[in-house]
Amino acid sequence: MLDKEVLRDPRDFKAVYNKGKSKADRYVVVFYRPNGRKYNRICFLASKKVGNAVNRNRARRLMKESFRLMEDVKKGFDIIFIARNTIPGRKMDEVKRSMENAAKKAGLLNRENLETSRKPKTEPARR
Image 1 (cartoon, rainbow, N blue to C red):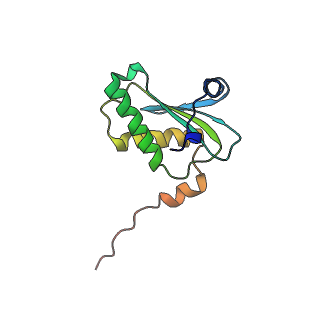
Image 2: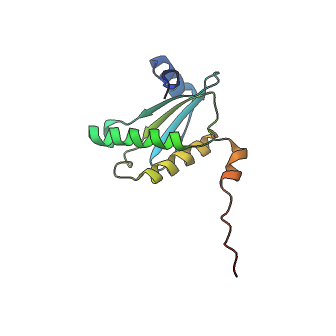
Image 3: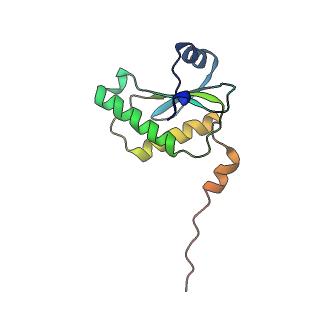
């Protein structure tokens, strides 16, 4: 991730928390707010409620990788992903699905590309 894409300034955090919106799913909560830029600034947090340092770091790594694999995220937002205390012991695909659901609820995913990426599987031709 580039430095400009990381949310760092405490004033920006306060703005996202106070003036932004939030959506939650089973394993993550997402806070978001338009930032007026052509790129997203993102942060991944895990509080001590998640567990010890090993669990918190694993939760952040899972969220970072899940976000990296997410397709068609709208640009121009400050986004904070917060791990919930239900995340320890979860697999990558569960966390990714939870993050996608939260982002979808928040309207952070481009709609027109969702239908094309979720085409039903075609059955093999029978002989």
